[in-house]
Image (tube, rainbow, N blue to C red; front, top):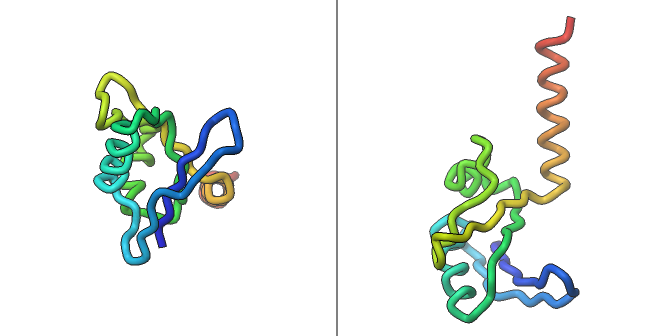
Length: 105
C-alpha cells in the first residue's frame, strides 16, 4: 500500500493525494506527483519516506550520501529526502552493532 500525503510545514494542514494498493513508490512516480503538485502552485521542499522500500532507496541513491534530488518541475530548485525516524534509528543501531562486532578489540 502506498499513500502520499501533502502537508504544510508551519501548520497542521495535510491531505492524502495518492493511494496505490498494488504499487510501491518509485522515483518516477514521485516525480510525476511532484510535477502535478508544483503545477498547482504547491512548492515541494522535502519528501519523507519509509526506509523499507529498497528499490526507492536505490533509485534516489540514498546510501551514497545523496540527501536531495533536483525538482523535476523546476530544475533550479531541489527537494530533500527525509527517511522516517523509526527506520533510521533501526538502521543506525544495526550499523553500530556491525562495527562493534567486527572492529572491536
